[in-house]
Image (cartoon, rainbow, N blue to C red; front, top):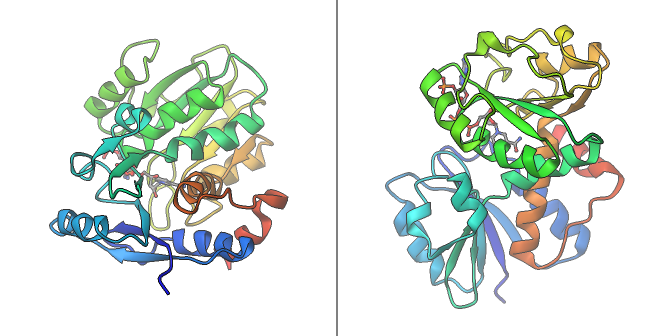
Length: 276
Ligand code: NAP
């Protein structure tokens, strides 16, 4: 008997936690199906899609580095949000074999943020100017932020994203300028790999930010980054990297398997599996 299945593709790929997440939900719902890692190189991406397009059991895939942008021209259709973001992290195969690209990283940012944000006037400081930062721009806006500015090591990339974010100044900023410049409440998003094991922490002094600031960390290895530790020590509200990982996966899961995953008790059982 054939089973529906989905995958996560990338190069490298074995580090991805997506199979743990999707298999947990398949099991919790008692659904027949599977979710696997697939090692796909840049050179092999087109051939991979051609094979899976003909496989009626294949529901689609999540897409991670280095394919989030390269996969876009290989698909039959793009969700308008993925087109705006300029990156695809989820591909869904229709019954007719047509492949549509989505960006559920945006949902992964918006979901935990909207649950915490009670004010309408928040300003988001996004650190980073890569693919994750692009999703963060749309995610913080959907999550309730009023305005956004971009901070990055490489200045010209910050300028490009500042245009996408409609930043009030119209320009990006160097990392060293990350201080509160807006009078409204604050959201700080780390959309870089700073804070990952072996990397320098994000160079920011959170004591300069207001007490109602929300610190959103995308890094999840380690789960408690220096940025989150600093925020918690100051009593600021925090969102960790697993919140985004689980949130983006939940939207993709429903697209693959046709049912929303169980999200009970703050995803406690799933978080325990992911941090074991
Ligand atoms: P990317 O496109 O390669 O962008 C990397 C970003 O990090 C760039 O802005 C880069 O700055 C900056 N950066 C890297 N090393 C740095 C350093 N030593 N000092 C200062 N800036 C540095 O990667 P991405 O796809 O956007 O991913 C960024 C992070 O988000 C990664 O840690 C990834 O694991 C995480 N992420 C998490 C989730 C989740 O579900 N939690 C989802 C997606 C991504 P330059 O422009 O100057 O190079």
